Image (cartoon, rainbow, N blue to C red; front, side, top):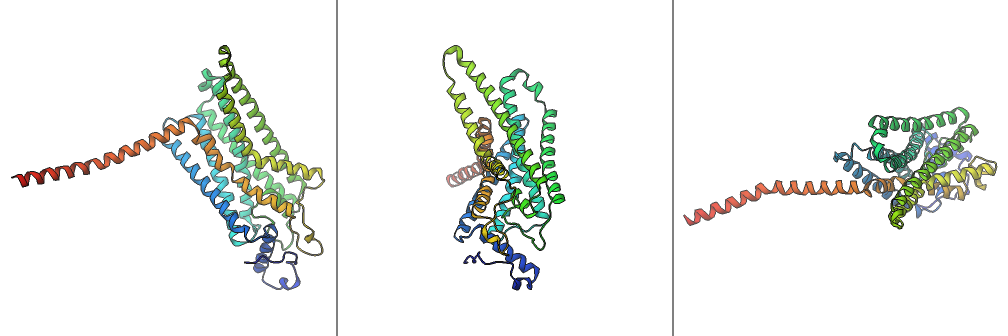
Length: 381
């Protein structure tokens, strides 16, 4: 399949006489090839998104299954928060992964429809929920390490339920308020039923709706506030935990290398998880500094041609979509399968299954042995 010449305008007078559905498909295909002009890159992107989606589904489901099967883990606040993080990651993968793969297979950008708005709300809620959950996990570890004697008094089941409810109410409210402001203050261009991206992410939706300032400012302020709160909570929690661990070996005139490696590992994983948000906040700040909240358009949008994103904006959009699927892949590994308790529960579960398989096969072995003895006795008689 050869990519069309994207220098030609998709909105000519001949196409206006065609049916509206075909015009929408032509526009979606035109915008798709403006994002990904090289056809050879499409199968590679499909493979990348498919592998990330499959891996995310697998590791999250395995981790959740281990926690639910273990009676020693399912009641602990640490793993209750881990289950909520898995739920957020699972929804995020289900919202982003298949939608992008479907757009790549069709060689078309997303259509602006109710599903697009629902995708926007779900994606926003999942990202804010994941961010709030890992912040709560850092604070929970701080209470566990620094207030060990009062931990069970402070972190109760009732308070955990309230924290989870607060996380989801906050996350869903951000998505609903943002899309409401966008629909109220924005306006969809006439006869323009597709967006410029492979996914209904904020930049593309805002550009499609005319870049209303109110919704963009609301999204950027609350996104930056949540990210800053997460960073401060992690810095405070891990600093205090490292301080306590270091004080434990001061009388022995030694350095707690294990505590240092643990803190560095979790800080590195946190940076990797928040990398998409860092880039998003940095790009938002850059566009605001340059005096525009809109996506940079290419020169082809001049002269009556349909507007298309520039090469920089297109590369940024595709890279952001890939990075959005990375945190759901690493979260269950970092906060779940890396845990000693999870690995022990997995080993116990595998040992239990092996013992049951041996026990299930034992009666058959006994019956075969009895038949052999019976035949030997019959021959001897």
